[in-house]
Image (cartoon, rainbow, N blue to C red; front, side, top):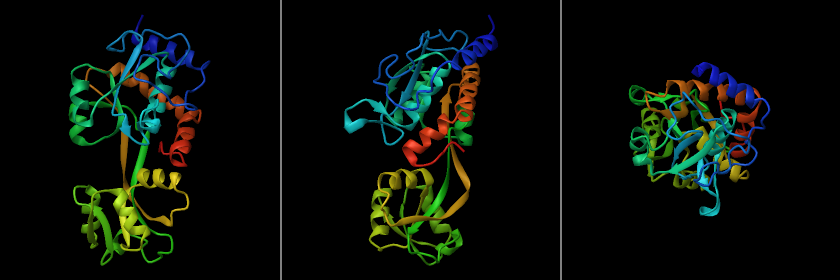
Amino acid sequence: MSTKTLIAIAAAASLTLTACGQGGSGEGQAGGGGSTAETGDGSGLGLAQEGVLVVGTEGTYRPFTYHEDGSGELVGYDVEVIEAVAERLDLEVQFQETQWDAIFAGLEAGRFDVIANQVSINPEREEAYLFSEPYTVSPGVVVVSEDTDDITSLQDLDGKTSAQSLTSNWYEVAESNGAQVEAVEGWAQAVALLEQGRVDATVNDKLTFLDYTNERPDSPIKIAVETEDASLNAFAFTKDKEELVSAVDEALAELKADGTLAELGQKYFGQDVSG
């Protein structure tokens, strides 16, 4: 039986399944929180383990992949998206939690089939890995106090004070547009200074802002500017996984069409972030 036939069968079977976007889970064991339907064997997809999609993820990167209350079940936007994909492909899910610094080495060593950890697509990575279609799209944003009305473009940062981590590319965006940079360790410090009125702005990605305001809807901040360029985040695979990538892309298309991705975005960020 050909790989294309297998993928078609998996896609047809998925029409009778309910997307798993309503209850993220996954406890680092096969099938933890995945589909309860009978699974396929994934023949022809080059899986590390027959019938199981083994997923590399950090498990410490909220709200994408983390443990509830620090030690509860594995949840998060990326976790639920890849679970929904596996369900569409009639596969069980097994999560392998790995530190970020070792996650690509684990993929290359065959410890797992795919990385689900908000991996941004860039030219360097595209030379070494295959990527699915993006399931999150996040432009850069200039965040200001809710009563600020004199910053409506990146150029308006000229002469303003912007709180930025010096190791972030957002630092370069702020500085190149004339901002006086107040050095901070990360978003938490930057937004604290902004809410206290000690800086005029901070530049970061939109997902970070949405996650923060979804948890703290009363925060007196807003988006003043969105950049034209956006970060595209996708599942990462080794170069020999062409058939698996095609199957995952088909599943993602179905999940976008039926509203599952939008529902998951609404759950974790207050809006659809799938692009």
